[in-house]
Image (tube, rainbow, N blue to C red; front, side, top):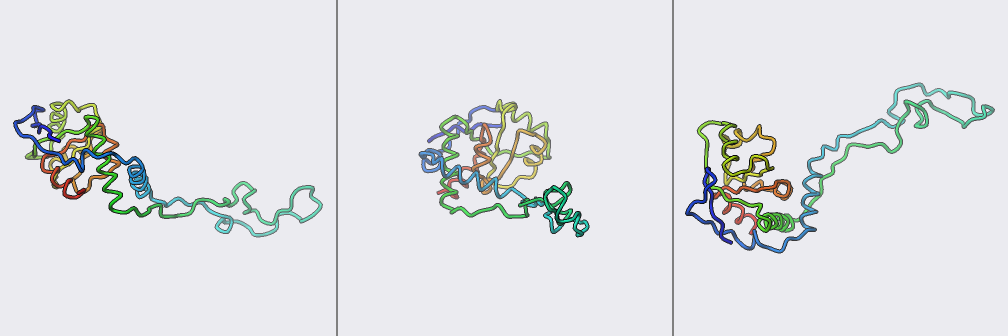
Length: 208
């Protein structure tokens, strides 16, 4: 699949890049995508939720009323879950939500997500660029030239570039990642995926 490379002015250059069919034009596997996104969201959970059970509540342990003759149910402790301020029954406890997925399945999911973007015109290839200093306004101008100022955009760089990252950091609809950190969730969460020219080779090397 041949795609024209755009410059920072949003104009097509004379250069074309050949996107591998084995990465950008496969039959998408929806179940692989589901599992990869589910794992990504699960791994982001802190799992630090906790509520106190009756053994952890501070309070008197005396029997609060006599066993019989009150006309109501017997009660042995003010810390019982049936009373206001008592412990919680089967409350949340700290836990780890992460789970394992095979590397081959995760690669299939990412190839599927990229193929969906390619099929639906959600993929752009941009020439490699840099800023002399971090400037949010310059990055906004770049998005304007590409007509992406109102879209949720994922920019994939071939390698780490602090000036580009810092320039995009304050733009709420923008996310910048390097090709080796590309994940299925980010690809699907963006309306447009912009690939820096140098990132294409890295992506194809990892996913093939």
